[in-house]
Image (tube, rainbow, N blue to C red):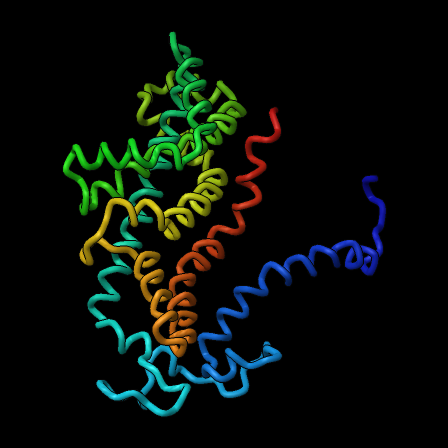
Length: 300
């Protein structure tokens, strides 16, 4: 009821299960972040400790490690920045960042333009095209792996940036999501733009995109996180060091655990660094995230 005064303690009690659920969800990330600064003895301690007794940066760079020698100390191993040259780490970081930015930016622009045309321009076949877009969402991604790989091979794009960029530009869900938001935009805006002499591109750029900002922010989070963490597709189309990405390199580093259990802390350190850009993206766009998710839910 409007104006009804709610008790703050009761509000907190109602939210308590959600707080507990949030702690449960964040627990693996907390464990990973703290393990990056723990020596191996603390990581393998039983029972496990959630606090850091002797924090250090040795998993990133261990000055006690000597090249060509096996240290008798259990906690001494080759740090992350001692295993890979800074130039190589920078190269694969730029690969992942460039792919994420390119695919996120252009896939959202293409999806918003397609949604605008499908909603505001009635032409023969528009409903059929939209139906095919929706139908494509029902096809499991795994089913398309082999046809997509054969297409990349026939185009000669294996071990190329084209194979990492072009297939990611088609996002059926973003077209559907933007369509639902644009349907709620008043037609008066577009009629006024036509009267002012605005062409279709200017209407889309200066009217549709600004009004889509909350929806774009929500999709930026979903699309950028998916591309940043994309492992399977780069694994299929890339097998050289020049085009490798952070998830591929991280999986290779994790494979070293079978040879050297002392690499556990190094893997945690690398995972922490890889997760930071995704965390920053979420923090930047979190204010628009909820607004974007509900943008197409109310028709008015």
